[in-house]
Length: 192
Image 1 (cartoon, rainbow, N blue to C red):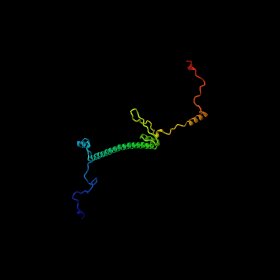
Image 2 (tube, rainbow, N blue to C red):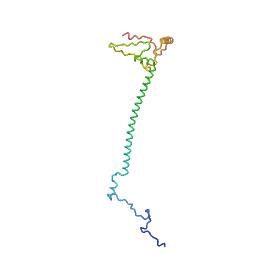
Image 3 (cartoon, rainbow, N blue to C red):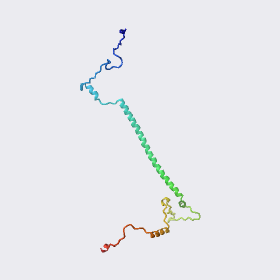
Image 4 (spheres, one colour):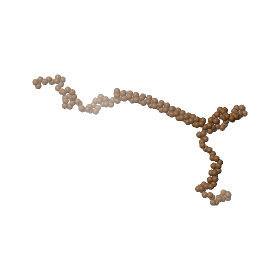
C-alpha cells in the first residue's frame, strides 16, 4: 500500500519556510540598470517626511523643554528669595551687634548717670540748675560720654613715669648708627 499514499492537494512542496533548495518562488537578484526606470530613482530621492516615531520624539522633547523651563524658573525664583533672606539675616545680625554694644554701655555706671541726668534726675543732695539762652529756652548739654569701645584703654602715663624714663635715657643714650657728624663747615654758601 505504499502506492496509495495521499499526496497533498495544494502542491508538492513542504510547508513553512522557503528558500534555496526548498522549492519556493524564485527571487530576482538582478538590479535594474541606472536610469532604466524613472520611478525607482524618484523613490530614493524623496525628501524625508515626518514619521510617527519622529512625531513622538518631537513631542517628548517639547515636554522635556517645558518641564525644564518651569523648573529653571522656580530655581531662579527661589535663588532670589534666598539672597533676600541672606541680606535680611545680615541686617538682623548687624542690629543684634548694635543692641549688644548698647547693652554693654548700660553696664557702665557713668553712662547710666549721664542718661539719668539727661532725663532731669539728680543724685541725692545735689541741686539741679538749668541754663537758659537769650530766648529763655534751656540749652542742651554739649558733653556726652563716648562709647567705651571707641575710647579704648589709652591712658596717659603719670608725670613721674615720664621723668624716670628721661633719667634712664640720660644714663644710657642710644647709639647713633646714621651719618657721622660733619668735620668741616661748608663755606661755599657764605661766599656768594
